[in-house]
Image 1 (cartoon, rainbow, N blue to C red):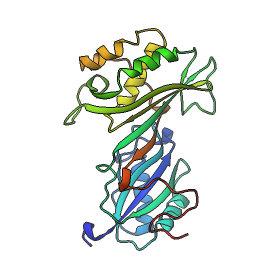
Image 2 (cartoon, rainbow, N blue to C red):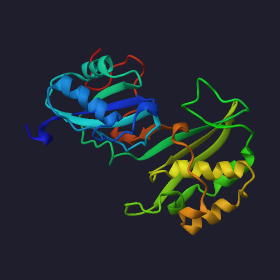
Image 3 (cartoon, rainbow, N blue to C red):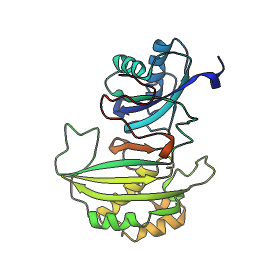
Image 4 (tube, rainbow, N blue to C red):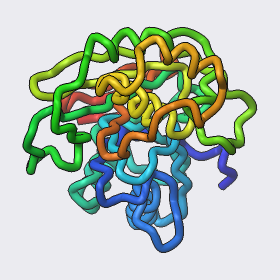
Length: 268
């Protein structure tokens, strides 16, 4: 059956990235895409290609990664969700599944994404959160970090926060929101943008952490941004503190349904 004649199924995937070598399939490596595609082969009896909103690197987590695949299988979305969750390991879960009845592409139709980075600021590390936070033994200057973050909000060239050699048509992105706030003994940095360059959030967080430690002034973020030079920004923050929170598609894809509720094309 031609690919364009098949049904398009959309998945929302939550995963704890510690044991994954990122999202994208890599031969001989455990990846989120590879694991789900292998299970779909068992369920559908056909080879499918899973296309996500974007890649996440090794160790990065996701609350609601969005991906789609085409299939000739007659299974309803609920059966796909239940079948996948019955076979997948516990560090990857399908939290919702729907059939796309209008043209939809998980990567190209994304309007904005939100990431959250968590920094633990206490003397002792955490046994429970060790794979979810970046541990700092001392307090950071949150107001200074917040002032610094303000220099990155808006449409800018983020080349200073991307790898020196990156194959993209442009390094300009629109940062809609970059919030820094305290949440108990953690500092959360939340970034919403129309798109992100590879390592962009982690490089920004690493630079903001230097501001928080008093190693560079908050006002320097504007100069770093304008320099378009990766060497001017701070060190890259570890991957395990980063989590993809949400991918927004506007009217192309309604928000997640409530727990146990049926979405379009699904019967309970």
